[in-house]
Length: 403
Image (cartoon, rainbow, N blue to C red; front, top):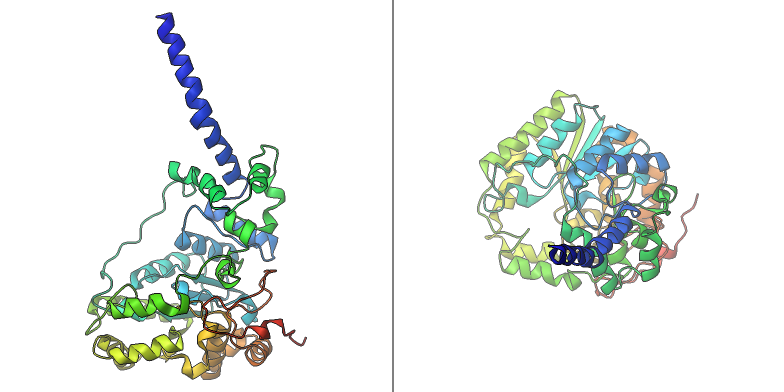
């Protein structure tokens, strides 16, 4: 019996040495990097700091609930809503308070759910919604996707997540010094939270700014390879009926009825609303023109919106705003300059939007900058490179705006 007990103790000690202690070290590293904070606390810390505290969580993605928490924390006058494609609207573009909830609406029903949630808290004066054409495609999304409720502990991670620091060390995404510093039980994350929250936010300045917009530092500065290099992924997806480029003959009636519910909800709350179709990079939009039969539903979407009396601006082809390929992150995501041009065009068309827009800033950035995806400085020290490998001249990023 004593021999069995001793064997049990040895096994337990070996287990603790091999598994428990390393996991505890990783837990401390993740905790002291802000990875374990619930989204409500993350949003509060960002807003309290009132500076560019970038949130970049490397262990999870809870965009819907994080953006909801940001909205509840700030109760803005202007709300930006859409998928990740609208995340480049910046607070600097506006003269009134705003929150960018890009990523909280990845389908029409998800957007409807988000609006119902946040309107219980407060009512914004203006809402700008970027539309993705594939939301309406009968072949792209199921009409009745349910929005999953958050787990009771939204910051709880899996065992796999607790092993990630080892992977990051192996891949040299973090240094041994950074790891050791933040696995120190005496390290106070709260004293350093203003410098960033989450591994990507702290070490790469990559993630969400305090207004909810997104900073693609790793991609734009070349720290991370662009998955859509030379737009090759977008071209391939289009040719193969792939994600975000699914073919379709017509729009889905259920999707469109859900969209009309969004319009009714906003109008019922006397909110000024501005819809626009989000842009593709010019050469992607031009290539799509060669697939008119395969993408017949897009023309149907335009005519159906018009017939329903829903006002919208169409930036699917970015020629209207003079955007270039070099101003895009990838084939479907425009950069800061693209969305500055979009907002300027929206305000020129809709006078009621003028009260919320910083016209001087928009005029300056659209005049002085060209072929860049990130308007400086965005709290980023590195410079933008030709990350798409299109032969882009990024020299205007060094221009200083006049005060």
